[in-house]
Length: 309
Image (cartoon, rainbow, N blue to C red):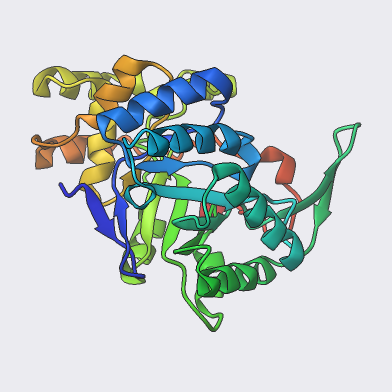
């Protein structure tokens, strides 16, 4: 297994990254510093996460101490769904760069294909009908200007990717989506492989800390009997088995943890393989469970229909 993949821009992207969703403050700074010490070189964040200034401080401190060079780190950030208009997209990107303390991001993604103007106090969402192609045009400008070394999308369907690929100018190099053994995403992965788009799997362990409905709570990947059985046989943890399954399929993975032992464990994925039999067993677990349903966006014309899950 290679430690890096080559994007269609020619840039190298590490295959194992440090996810930062829901991590902020001291917990983030401590965990990220340890991850960088271990050798993690891909950091996944987003404007929406509210943690880019914390990440920027860790990077600044390590660079100042001579422990890291900016060019050694691959930073992915994302344009928030409240910033799909061209001017707002550029502002969002500039704010991310300012907080991260860098002049460029290695990958900038449209976080969601659906836009939101406001979340009302009564729970009603006011949608933004700005089409994601306007946002994409802004990203292309950022790419051509050098402040985004590669560009892509997140939570897009095949049809939406086809729309992006139909636009003139630089194509997407990167798609990020929820993917794990319960949600194999074969259709999207095959499409991206054909179009030379690298795919990153978020929630690769099935989002064990995320609250779901009663049926989802019963479907926890880390304790799935099949995964536990394989982990005992190969003498690796269930998390390592789940991550290795995705890596062997050609995904980039971005597991998240604030526990140092698990951060270290999630990075120890080289020098061993799952057998074809093990891979086949895990593939059979695919049952369409999605932990990130974005229910507040239902009703938007670009919200993905069930058949695209």
